[in-house]
Length: 263
Ligand SMILES: O=C(O)C(=O)[C@H](O)CO
Ligand SMILES: [Mg+2]
Image 1 (cartoon, rainbow, N blue to C red):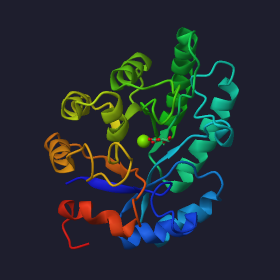
Image 2 (image 1 turned 60 degrees about the vertical axis):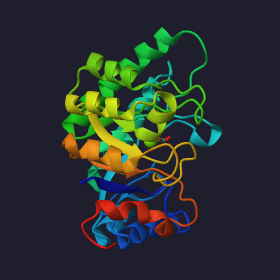
Image 3 (image 1 turned 135 degrees about the horizontal axis):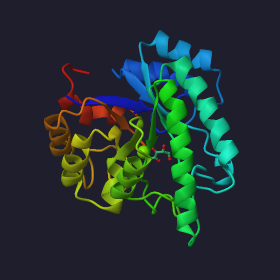
């Protein structure tokens, strides 16, 4: 049975951030993920997790100047020192929150000189994975669609798996977001059957396509997809990274079929 994590950056935004933990737990979630913990004291976040019996299963490393439009810096030449300090910061939070995985975003790149970006990306990921391994943390990379994030360096699953293979660190894995994957390449069943058995997919995420709302509307057949994921024996988490159409709790009807209770 799929295990779902509430994404607190997109869900429960009707509450202040620190109150989203309680709201997710009240709806029966046992795990949460979100973009960034850095605006909050790690001990306070830990308390929220503990108070509500939640696990933190994913967050992102510092992404550069997010407010000015940056979307990660791992593939940007010249930012290596910042990547290194960001990984250090992320690992401190991961230790306090007991979080076993950190997503490292590549960044937006212009046209041309992709070899330089790729070399930088591989070198940064190699160092990040080595450092994270010592802390028992997986580093994740996620292909993101260019409609939502024009210019993002990593778009396709095969590219991400090639990077993971080339770096060759057992704790560097792919974050397979089925929403992005459907927009960029489709063929989700084949992708899951091809990539989950490799052991290189460390986390799944889902949202409806094309509007990134609840996953039961639009192009995806979640009953089928969750069946495929189950058949493949995936025992990780599926992040619910979607923007509720009209109220987070009210929109959770899609999940009922996949739970053993009446929540
Ligand atoms: O946008 C997504 O799908 C993500 O998972 C990233 O962490 C943030 O952009
Ligand atoms: Mg995602």
